[in-house]
Image 1 (cartoon, rainbow, N blue to C red):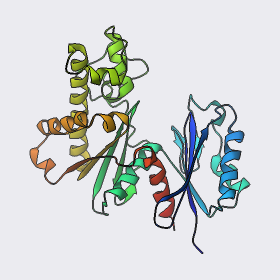
Image 2 (image 1 turned 90 degrees about the vertical axis):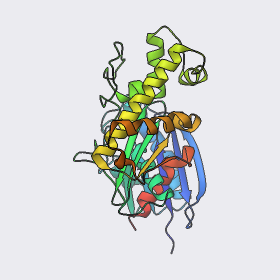
Image 3 (image 1 turned 180 degrees about the horizontal axis):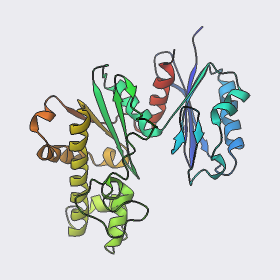
Image 4 (image 1 turned 180 degrees about the vertical axis):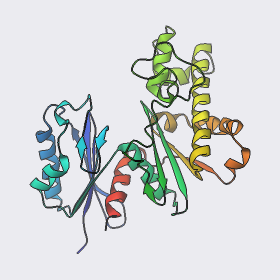
Length: 295
């Protein structure tokens, strides 16, 4: 009997649920609002869908910081009632499942792209999602690299910018996310008296000196990040996802080219750079592949 797998991405705003066919295609997909103040209400909807579709095993994406092996969200400002809830125990008490795994979005997206671009066990995939925030995931030996306590690739606070930002919100003054994410660049524009969102900055890049300066510094910071990743883990594939990457490919490609000046040129021999082709479904596919790999 064929097993039915489901991928469930729990975000601060919405939950996305999908089941898959035996040939790795999305069969059914549904999105509904997350109730941040009543986890039982949201989980009940998920349980109902699991039962309705006769699901055998599930993979769930939950925001960090979290105890991913045990499925416990530790502390998140967007899901107040979900803190310290053991989701693994709760799901297993409500529905009969053969397996359940938990992962964060960026790691799931990294795994999806490792599979999508047909990387093998001896290949290394470095993934970055450049969107509202900035996250990353690393695949080595066909597995998500989690580090010793699941904090590997939590890069938002990495001090990789060439200068410090005096007003830096909740981030560190040299942080990657502050200089290269959509929200970070918008914060920096506001610090200079411009009420611009990321899309405004990109639209004004050719015509406004402030916009050009902010984006060029974002490119430089991302280039330093790419060079650092190359030096530490030597990937043969970089993949970029998220809205900034999707709608501004040139931003990514320019950073990739500039990265070469920060490291040994031979590091970039036979290294590819790609843009995530799965869009909003990237995390769902990654979660699906993760649970599928358990069987």
